[in-house]
Length: 98
Image 1: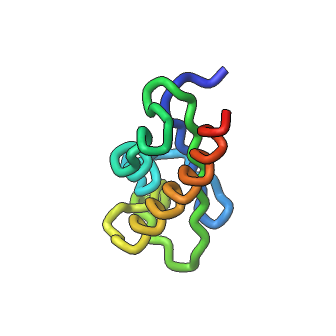
Image 2: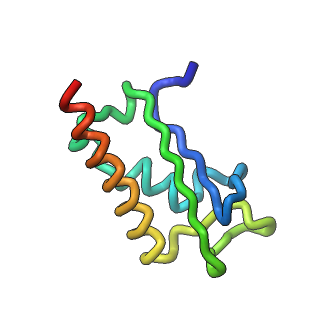
Image 3: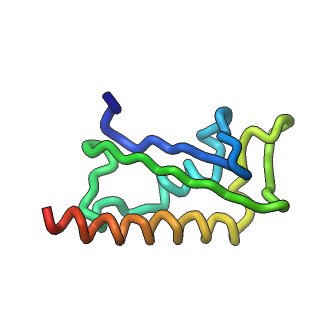
């Protein structure tokens, strides 16, 4: 089974990004910028999976082999945070009902 904590699954143009997960904008945002407690989730005790796909012709890849998406683009960072928090808000309504 899955371990407690946050698991991040990143995709760019429908291709999974398998390397350099710690440097990626999605991973950094999920780990450092989301107040999980606000959504009735514990980042250390609950099993949380974040799936995020970015589709564009202008993805700011980093690394020699396009291994990850850099977090230097404020627009992408804001869009990632907004997407995750919107999903969390929807999920919170389901968790509160349980």
